[in-house]
Image (tube, rainbow, N blue to C red; front, side, top):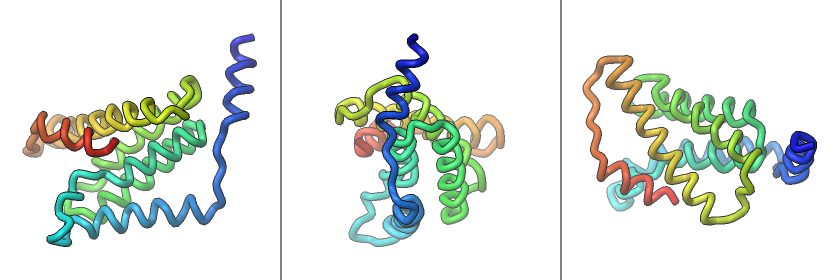
Amino acid sequence: MAVLASEYRRELEIRRYPLAVYVLVPLLALVLQAWLPRVPVVGRFTYFDLPLLITVYFALGRRNPVHGTLLGAALGIIQDGLTQGQIGIWGIANTVCGFLAASIGIRVVVENHTIRMALNFCFTLLASSIAFFVTRGLLGLNGDWNWLGELLKAGAMR
């Protein structure tokens, strides 16, 4: 009976948008993520990880782990291509966060803004941790980790 109730709630609250929204919003986020840090006046926007925010938002709204995983992978790989880093690091991080966000969205009511802010905070820390682990542990590259900076970045993402 619990499975039936879970499936009914999942189907009832799925947010669907037109295809143009699924294409233009992530594209805009990627363009802004690549362009804003280069503008001297708005350099403080380097703290925002817009593709991760878009991934988490759409994954929580659609409540489909496959959709969240594929969206996170696509946005992360394109984000890696637009930056100067290694290809695949943010792709892995966004993929994991997209899958987890959609999986949590199935079980938890995420319409509350406090819950969404807490999830964004946690997913930002998780994505940064995964990126650091892949950079340092798997690739053996030097990666800087600043706990205070990561906490401020996660706090700014809410």
